[in-house]
Image 1 (spheres, rainbow, N blue to C red):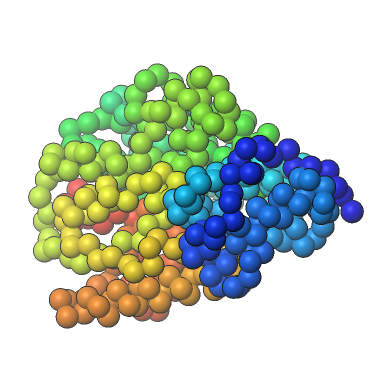
Image 2: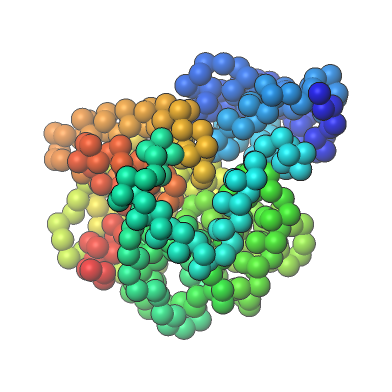
Length: 397
């Protein structure tokens, strides 16, 4: 049994007063009903290990690994407990001790930092899916065989961050983003090297890899121009560089980062009018947009330019995607997703009197991929908000 402490911030750990207000907002607690799978229960387990009253055993590791890291507990916490920071540090300690994130996961995450290798691997994986060689239990949605043309920079008003998975699997959303930036009269530059923000590595406890990727990302977009990000998870990671790296340069960089919905919502009056009748769109808030970046109103303002927004009734409860969580914890991820699907069904039924709803807007690749296959059975498409708006405005094919 290993009894070494987790090197947690004592003030952050002691901030939790065990009030329990976080419980309804925790997806793993909602599906299991077990205290140990709640933020309060996990913090109690961290305290036990940190004080050396409890061992780092398999049970402790399971409680930490099964957290989605959605951080839905944070906005609900009256004590402002920084649960996300505590969980990342705990996982970093466990990963350093080789208690989590085995070699094959580490190898997979390393590929994300090598863009050409990622693109080639994604194509091979897509071919494997068509040939029935990729097990469905992995929870990987159908990947594109073709990505279409890469973007061409138009100027230097803003940086358009392209990232890793977004460019490999959802490059069309980059084209929509570029078209909408241009429609406002602004120009965009592209990072000097394709790369990964390190969000998944941070979730997995791979601290050194995260730092290296953060430094590469910062170097790829120098200067003072705003950095527009269309992936909620990437945007949350980039905005957190200041705290994660703890340097003035990182803090200045993080201050430049803005979510694409946030940026476009402030310029919606510059966009052209819709070329199609107004549609009805359900909004699914990715956790790293709603709970971490605390941005939900801009999404609705942007979509409202072309559509009538239909709300879900689950107060932003996680869908279960969690970056790589749906692949690493497929059973829990599926149970969590079922609650989101039920919420979508209720929204569709409630809106039926005013017309059909066949579209869900989600601003994160993990969420949209996790939901799309399940919602396809209901004849409901999942699309990024900028894709919805760009198509309605006729600025993309």
